[in-house]
Length: 225
Image 1 (tube, rainbow, N blue to C red):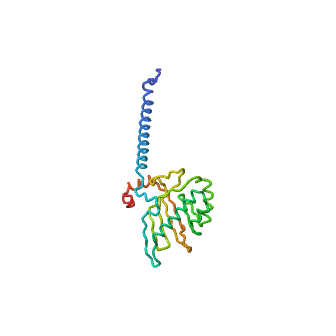
Image 2 (cartoon, rainbow, N blue to C red; image 1 turned 45 degrees about the horizontal axis):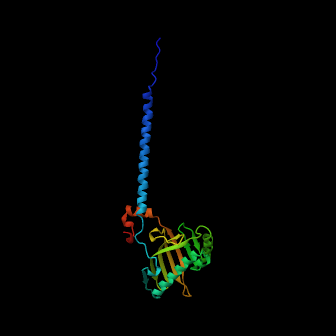
Image 3 (tube, rainbow, N blue to C red; image 1 turned 90 degrees about the vertical axis):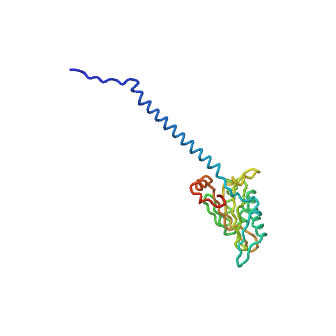
């Protein structure tokens, strides 16, 4: 009776599958690294080219304003200066961490929507929230604005759009570095003072905006084309 024996694999034969696996892992790793570097490079390029073209004016009184005539009349150049004075008082109160002074720039029934979607209703609500904010999240900060436009609808209503942000220190950020886009609706109250009736703050997503313009250029505002 004969005995069948099986040959043991040689060291070279045993090493071949392991060598192929290592090669495959090296290829996969190299591909993943290349994709990651390309993605990172693409993001850096998008971020570097995402600055807006429409930067606005640092001086509120210098921004172009449009006046729409109504049966009740139209606004004057002095009205623009008065609206700007309210927005300046708002920034000054923020810089002093003065929540009462900040709230005083709003109408009693004003609405205030932050860039994270928090919605405040009424002057007292706005002042109370900023008392906490000035002692916490935004402690020691100041406001920077660059004004995009101002429109008057009759003599007693104004809409102001701006780019804005908070900052620390004595040097304001450049207009291109301001990360929020803001809308103020102001009204002239019975005593003649302009106050903010509604404020809406939006976080600008520069890279996403740039991607959308590249994907479909027709989505870009005329000022950004």
